[in-house]
Amino acid sequence: MREQIIASAERAFRTNGVRNISLPYIMKGAGLTHGGFYAHFKNNDQLVIETFHFAITDTIKLLQSVADKKADQPRIQTIIEFYLSSVHRDQTEVGCILPALAGEMTQLSQEVRKAYTDELKRFMAFIADTGNISLSTSYALVSSMVGTIAFARAVNESQFSDQLLRGGIIQAKRVLEAN
Image (cartoon, rainbow, N blue to C red):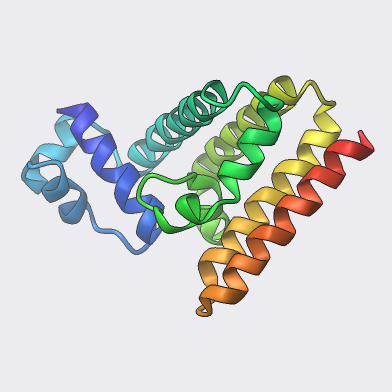
């Protein structure tokens, strides 16, 4: 049941953020009643923190899988192209949680912000390892990728959104080349 709650929270947070989602909504998405929540989590922050961890784990697994399927180019290049794709942009419910929640982190508890920070660092380390690049370069690369996907999701013009994605890919590759 705990896994069902986290899975429901992942989908909800990726799509609507943390502050815009109610506990009853998450529990309903898990096929459970609201009253059962506290049997699994001490509070909402604990759910959010655990959800971050599982969401980043899922994103890393997805990106590893995508990179494994395309052996004709460097893994990091495949990851960049997928991350900054229209598929990733349009499937927010399974997409990376980092851009989905970045804007509201300053309004959440310090405990939640620490968890977000830890998961961002873990994702950046994954990118550094996968790309065989420095952590500093990974910071620039991930910042560019997350910012690009956040903007591409935010705008209301599909052509402009596609242009942002293409521009993001070009810039991400320049970051790699400068390494």
